[in-house]
Image (cartoon, rainbow, N blue to C red; front, side, top):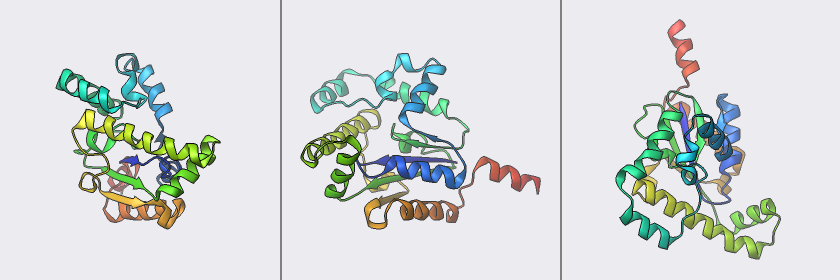
Amino acid sequence: MIITIARECGAGGEVIGKLLSEKFNIPFYSWQILVEMAKEKGLYEEMPTFFTEDPMNSLIYALSATVHSDKVKKTPLNALAKLLEGQDCIIIGRCGNFVFRNRGDCFSVFLHGDFEDRVASMAKKWKTTKAEAAKRVPKTDEYRSVYHKFYTGEQWGYSSYYDLTLDTYRLGFEKTTEYIADFIKDAGIKTCAELAEEREE
């Protein structure tokens, strides 16, 4: 099983990812962990901006989209697929819904929420004012959207590209986690450990 989480800034992606990790007893790979894994495999040096999900502004994207070949864009995606091949895990960002779409045990979710709620959450996390957070939150969302579009050609956050999209502030992070977990179980998606147990029975 691989659960991919795409998220608006401040929608609780990391919190929910960690809670899902506890529920399914599978690892949650934050961007920091993915960077370390990529370094261990010798992949990071070739494509650091992909693994750190570095922001790209609209001008850079417009230039890059015409200059860079499909091979340049697909190489990082293929590297990520190989890095996590056959693993049970939860991954946040990095175009995960696109990369692992054809894995039979993939479940993709997009998390969003009310702007004011997200701003308040990030102001607390960043230890800054709400006014400053109100500037940074939409910029972060824009960077993620452009990053996703550059590597996949798809619209970030478009519901048809995910198994489930949820407003995390309507239910709260814990109930959102429970909802996702129940959805996955009802869909019949199982971890490698669960499948192994079934084969032994």
